[in-house]
Amino acid sequence: MWKSILYKEWLKLRWIILISTALGIMAVGSLFLNVQHDFLFMGAMTYWYNTLFLGVQYFHLLKYVPLVIGIAIGVAQYFPETVNKRIKLSFHLPINENKILLLMMLCGTTTLLVSFGSMFLLFWGLSAHFFPQEIVYGAIVSVTPWFLSGFVIYFFISLIVMEPVWKYWILYGLIGYAFIGLYLEPSTTGGYEPVVLKFALLTVLLSLSSLFSAYRFRKGEM
Image (cartoon, rainbow, N blue to C red):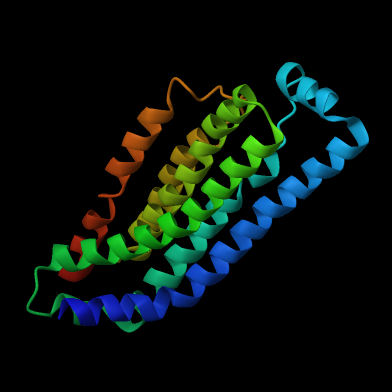
């Protein structure tokens, strides 16, 4: 039974994980092509000076990429389940309903981890190739909340899509917008260092939010 559920999730996500990972890697590659170009025309020392003392963020184009990937994976996974309330078929299986939903979330979260992990490691490696350790550390601290925002939007999409009452969609959307705004708040390079671990913990807590809408969905709340 569990294998059947995993296979169903794989069928929904197999293309989106390949496309999102490929586009994410291309985005990181394009980012460092620009860095290489600027190195050639400005010189490494000038570019490093601009980054350290003038606040130039060479990674700023990466800001919304994880957010878009999180939206794409969330919609691809959960929207088909709500068409004609197909997910209710899963909830009638002889398996605990919460376990089914948690397994679905685990599949989606794993998909995000694969996509974001590939991007993050590539970003880290190329940053270390072009920049000294101080700049790399600040960049890693700065982009980490952006990657976490991809998980947050994924969890809120599951919360909204599984919600049976449209009025709650607006409420959840506004709450999600407020939370995501925290992760994407403009900051100096490395400025998120005091709160990055708190953001990670908050993201884990938000992952449980969709259980509430799923409960309402399967009970037919109106």
